[in-house]
Figure 1 (cartoon, rainbow, N blue to C red):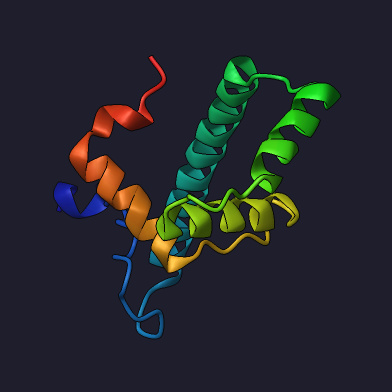
Figure 2: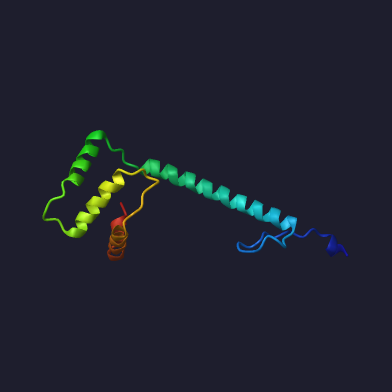
Length: 124
């Protein structure tokens, strides 16, 4: 009898569970759990944004012009793969950062570089 008076904790629903047959308490517990997860992820995003700001390198106008001049100079003796890479880089520079879509060749190239030497992607 004493055990039945003890309030049982309500567990949140699993991720793919149907909501139709669930009790109100379980739905509330699920929403609370998801809010905690979202808050933790938002905190992690804020930390990463601060780290990006701390580690970013500012580029002045002259350096930007130099980079664009290097990208504009195609050269005839360039490998066709490198030529596609430079064209895609020029295209990506002209697009906003949230609308970028990478060419499949560029993705394959990056994966092959990473497969050969993951250290190529590390700065330090």
